[in-house]
Length: 164
Length: 200
Image (tube, rainbow over the protein chains, first blue to last red):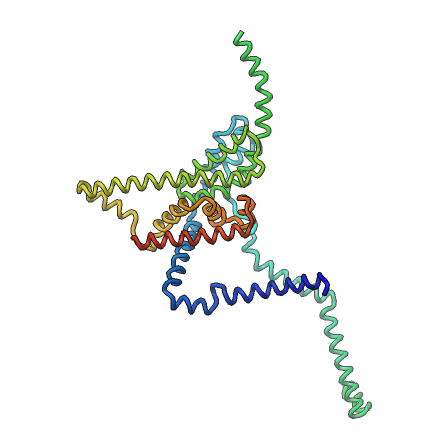
């Protein structure tokens, strides 16, 4: 076996392995649910870890005021050297507001982008000839059927059936 | 004679200062680039806007005076670690103050002088699990208590929301070690928080 094949097989097995492991040992595995339902210690552990996660999400969800970045920048720029404070960039920082990341901005367009991509893919496939080759398969199938009928019932009857 | 010397000194100092300013423009660029992420992280650690501004200012002041006003090799790592350390020391200070005021309140209560006042204070930290503020403050306190290597990972991964690879890069660890540290930190926090719940 060549090293490339071996590598590809390893890669495939790695992904299956991960999937099967997460099915068997992940938090959603049935036997884990069953065990937790019957084991008070594990239930307590799960509850305490969930408490930490709940507190973390609460901290993350708490919003700050919109001008906090502006105020922090103003305060920080204020202690820099005079010539740095006078820079146009410093002025820009004093009025900066938090802006959403590119991924957050584009998030709302994700569904329509996916639909457009699907349409383009279909058009591309039609153009390339995938759909054309399907009609070719159909005519080849029809030819095979005609040949079968010709061998079984005769050429004349077969012609009559398939030309009608 | 002295006047002459001083004026001569100023004439020589001026171009040096100008070149320093020129070379320190990277501070403004760093502020522009990492400021929003840094403010979010500080807000999540401290939960108080005034403290956030103070910690942010302190971070950039330290950056401006880093080893003879030189640019650190890894600015992002330097900024995030400095900000996190500053915020944690502020948080510890705040917790110590709160503990002290609670002790004073308890001693007053024991003396039976200001029963009403102490009732008002105890109303501020209810034992109810669903009290979001109490839960948040409790977690902040426990994060400040974590050993440094675990605390840094939790702060950068969970509060600054950086990826494991970025956290590993900032702390000079491997991504695997970062994952292990985070797991240990969460286990420790969970144990402390459940212990605290039992006490309440």
